[in-house]
Length: 121
Image (cartoon, rainbow, N blue to C red; front, side):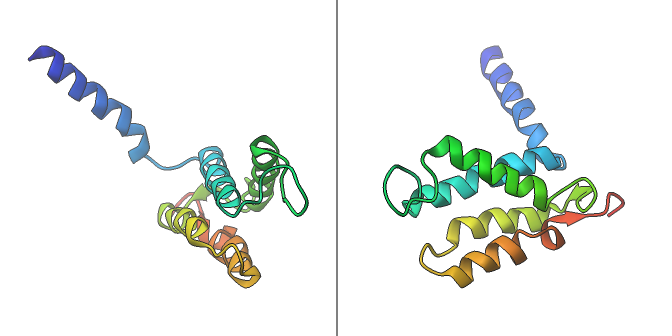
């Protein structure tokens, strides 16, 4: 009985950090993972002609750099949780074959205006 209670408490403690506000660094990491999953699903990672990235590592470096520029300390003092969740969901549903859909996701849905907020909000 004690082991069960201890495991339940441990599980709860592991979930608690996820309930707090997302830091900009965590947002960069999560968005990078989602975007590279998108590129992988769209078969844009790997060797060969027409691939966007040679491997997952190259994707992660370049995409993380993109989000560092998009969500800087100056233009993104805090993460808007709802906007950020919408961004992550949208990355996963963006069409691989539509440039318009891709740009809408990258610029509008996942842009600083949607994902970021003032610290006071």
